[in-house]
Image (cartoon, rainbow, N blue to C red):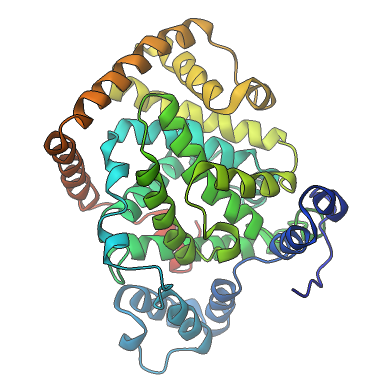
Amino acid sequence: MTVTAAWPTGRSSRSAVLAQFGETRADLMQWALTTGDPLADAVVDEMHELGMSTARPLLVRGIRDGLDALDDPPPALAAFLRQTETPPAYVDDELLDDLPLPWFSSPTPVHILSLSAGALVRVYESPSIAKVLSTTGRLVDRADKRLTETGTWLTQAMLPGNLRRGRPGYVATLDVRMLHAHMRRLALDRGYDSTADGVPINQVDLGRTWMDFTLTSFVAEEQFGFDLTGRELAGLYRYWWYVGHLLGIDARLVEGITGHDAARRIDDVLQTVTGPVSDDSARLAAATLDSISVLLRDLFGVPPRLSRPALDAITRRIHGPGMSQDLRIRPAPVADALLTPAVTAFRQARAWRRRSPERWRSAIDSTVAAERERTTAPAAPTAYQRGATGSTD
């Protein structure tokens, strides 16, 4: 591998990574810190050159209908669509239709909690992600909407069959990828310092976010009684290889992972070059937890005075006392004590469902059907969709 861009000054050091993980990993991290998503970034540059009124309809149609639907597409868009429409060799009908099913063995409220208190809080631990949101004016504003839209994308991406070309999960995932590219350009235009933090939303940030939607979320749900078997986890990780491909994440950062141990080995490297949490990280975490506390009251009937302490207790269990202190998440001993019997009850109920394959599959099918109905309801365009069409307002 040829590495030319300088190591960002705010992201640990090459020598530290070299000492802990070896030359191959050090080279990969240097490349990843200084690389965004070349294909998607080229599309955004092309859109600005052609003019949004010309480029936007081509992008929308290409994502939804495919490259073949475009007459004489501009070169960057053609290259982008060619990559997304060429699935890796491991993608087959089983992966697309069957491997995501175990994810739906947990009820939607559990995913909402693992997404908010688990995945997103850890995403925001990254100081560079916090800086991108701060630089672009999106640090705390619309935190509740960002949470809702991320949850909608996640469900669309996980529904069986939805990652086939032109299907809602495929379209939504490419919309997310294009939003990242628009945000990357916007952050640079507004003074984001790449010499210190690396390219905005770089491959380390993307790979680490992939870990938060897999490793962090899966482990969080296990902590609260919603365990998966080794085979189920291996299938979900494989499914997420393809999600990563569609998101523009380099295969070297995610492919081959089939369990938590392998994920942690890569995550340890990514975490080494992520940097300490910042004040902005703490503000983002607080905004996210404030938003989800309202849902906690509605979904679980938690009294208003207990909803935020309960959420703090959940978050502290997921992230541990050290990181929780850095993020200024307060201890909630009373709420934490109440979690233990609840987790026991969840685990017992899940074990009872597993004892009958018919009952287990029926519960999954019911959840899938409900989520298909919910996600097909008419809704306003999401930030991801607006980003994919050239607007990041």
